[in-house]
Image 1 (cartoon, rainbow, N blue to C red):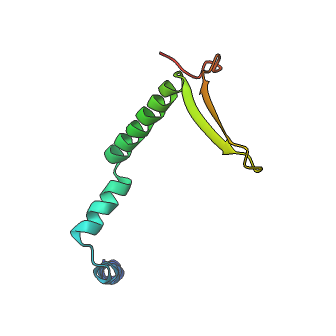
Image 2 (image 1 turned 45 degrees about the horizontal axis):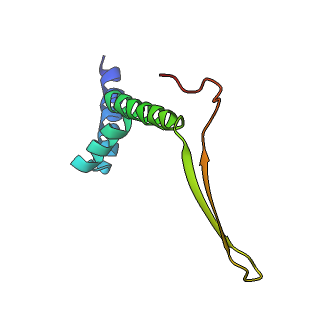
Image 3 (image 1 turned 120 degrees about the vertical axis):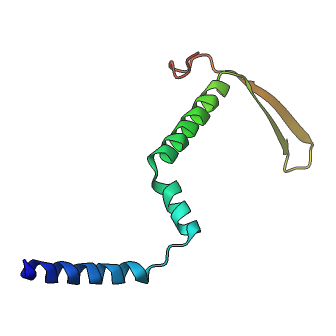
Length: 95
């Protein structure tokens, strides 16, 4: 029994020394929890999925764009107003 206590005590002593070498401030613990806690990761995943869905919903509306160019010979400026509307999106968007 005595032979088992010495290695365990030595292991605990060395491991506590290694733990004391790293100082964990509240900010460090908080950042670690934010980076690895399952509930936080679930909320972030849920927010990302919601943003992706909203982006996909906006794809069904027309997209306006304006282009302006000046000719190199100094003739004038041409302006193009374009509206693009997807006719078929390959069933990417759902209601």
